[in-house]
Amino acid sequence: MSDLRDRVRGPLAPSTGVQRPLGIDDVEIEGGPFGRWQAINREASIPLGLEQMEKSGAVPNLRLAAGEGGGSFQGYRFQDSDLYKQLEAVAWEHSRLPDDAYRAFVAESAALLARAQRPDGYLNSHYQMVKPDKVFAELEYSHEMYCAGHLFQAAVAAARAGCGEELLAVARRFADLLVERFLVGGDDGIDGHAEVETALVELYRLTGERPYLELASKLIDNRGKGLIADSGMGPLYAQDHLPVRAADTAVGHAVRQLYLEAGVVDVAVETGDEELLACSIRRWEDLVATKTSITGGHGSRHDGEAFGERYELPPDRAYNESCAAIAAVHWNWRLLLATGHGRYADLIERTLYNAFAASTSAGGTRFFYVNPLQRRADLFEDAYLGRRREWFACACCPPNIMRLVSSLGHYVATTDDEGLSVHQYVPGTIRAGGITLAVETDYPWDGRVRFTVRATPGGEWTLKLRVPAWSAPGELTPNADGYAELRRAWKPGDTFTLDLDLTPRLVLPHRRIDALRGCAAIERGPLVYCFEQIDQTADLEDLALVPDTRLRAVRRDLPGLGSTVLIEADAVRLPPAPPEGLPYTPQNTPQNTTAPTDLPARTPVTVTAVPYYQWDNRDGGVMRVWTPLA
Image 1 (cartoon, rainbow, N blue to C red):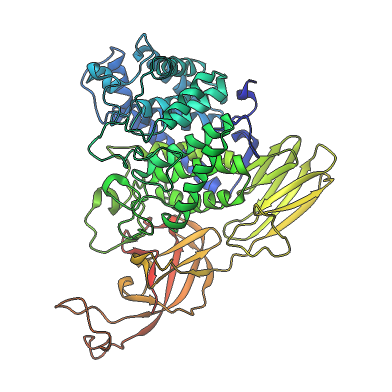
Image 2 (image 1 turned 90 degrees about the vertical axis):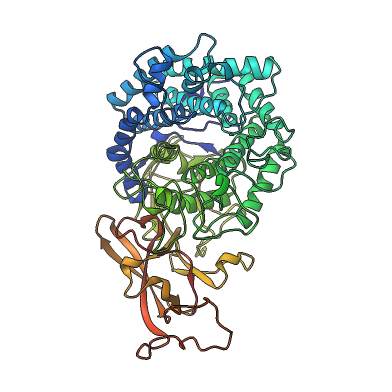
């Protein structure tokens, strides 16, 4: 196998597939929300994360494992994984904009990990310091392979960014131990938290060591055979209820399922296993149709951070963990590369601009673990739902967010034998195979995207542009995969303009989603909108949208948020709820019987909606995505 470090400087480098990814440094993002997020990530989020690696115990724990320092172990058994995700974020950021401080952090961390690593390759500060006699004995909840997976991904990132040979050596020693025990040695243990599968495949792609791929394949095929001991949450929680090839729907802990799916697609692509790929696509289709929030979020239950039943999508109790949004992007990206279908890019876009973007404050130093679609005035669960927090005791989300933001350029465009495909519309420059393409746009605020060819390898090649499912195709007719194709002998200076329809739209839920019946939401382009109390002239809980309202897009500057397109709509203020008695009335009871005599039953008002991802940056009050229809 060729050295893929020189081919793709990004998270994913499959050896085959319909589309080929670009490296992070092949795409320069020069504005728009993506550019803003990357700037804030570099200026605020990553420095905070580096500081928290010390405060949270992630780095001190490893010093203890290395026989350095004093004190006792801090945090959860998977605390090491926070450092690994932070290392990956730093590596991709170094690849994007080289920085000696980032290179030094990777080198210092790798040296510490090497000192902490046991001679046999094992590395996990919790089990080395707290339970040395239980190594690999509690896989149902130990997260040992999960942590190893994040180490492998950090090592791949550092190697591809040109700053991680020592980190890669640490990762390979641990990976070789896993192969020796769980592949060659015949141990059928499986980590209760999937993640290592996709990481092993990427380590195989980097190094060419096939046993890493074979171990990933074994771990996937052994699920559903009762080999994961019950952690107290049952077999569905860890996706051990059915063999992967037989399962039809996503179940259990959402992040575990989505990371597992990423590994399933990786193994299927590298082994040519069409059956394995097909079963993942089958679950994707069911998930999208029955278990996905309008924001692209996943996980409807706080209990077990889990998927619920089909169409169980409550707005107020939605869990929608930030890590689940990230894992969903990983899965969808792999499906896109494997098949070339634009529907996966559509869902990546929906997730990035909504469920994922909402996870971080405008200033980049506060985060959501949970991303609900409604917040009431008397909310009392401050720990996760009240406001964004600077950090968490279980801090899986913040460094995970940082690593995806640093690598956003990887998800913008791809190449194939015909030319260049653009999946996400951001201002900047794309370089691939002798092609240099400049992109000018104010997307997603404006639907016009202008492309200028700056360099071309000569001859004919095809420019494929995704036409989102929410946009009318206009003058372009998309192909079966959802892309407009322009094939010609391009010359430097040639331009093309894509106009996408950003007319605001009122969206209704499926009739089986009981929690949303009688409600509507607002979308414009890829953005889902919400109502916050700060923008309304009446109590948001008493407002209902007029079904035939004309939605008006209005551009304004919001303090701390910058230039934003808001949506104004017609609504009515309903009479307040009765002060006592049951909150139910017979069908024919006039709605205004309990209203003050001087208040009309339905007062016309104008309501204002903001992009969902910008919520909770101002008043911290009531919020709704789904609003009753009058």
